[in-house]
Length: 132
Image (cartoon, rainbow, N blue to C red; front, side, top):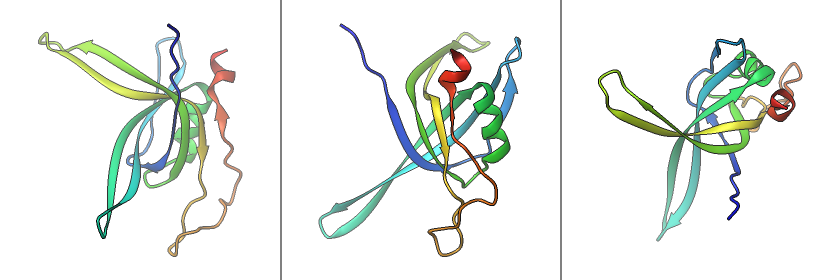
């Protein structure tokens, strides 16, 4: 049976993007995204926050490293991936992360919310252009 794996998230960065390069020179950026959900429970308004690790490749990774920082808003479209590895002492580890295909930068919020558009164009980038 064929599968379908698509994730769309909107939230705020929990840390500055960390930009590094693979041995063959491909840029890779990783950052955390906090995604909030508000809901009503009885008469109370509750908020639940989900923290998600994001990985992005290619030119888009360099742009994320240049334009995004902790607290910025972003919309991330991509796929969910489980990464597995073994530690030096032999323990098996795994984690889920979103591999971004598109990262759209949101305008920075001003004190009152709402916000003004950024002073320079901050385009979104499609990683499919980078990865073929």
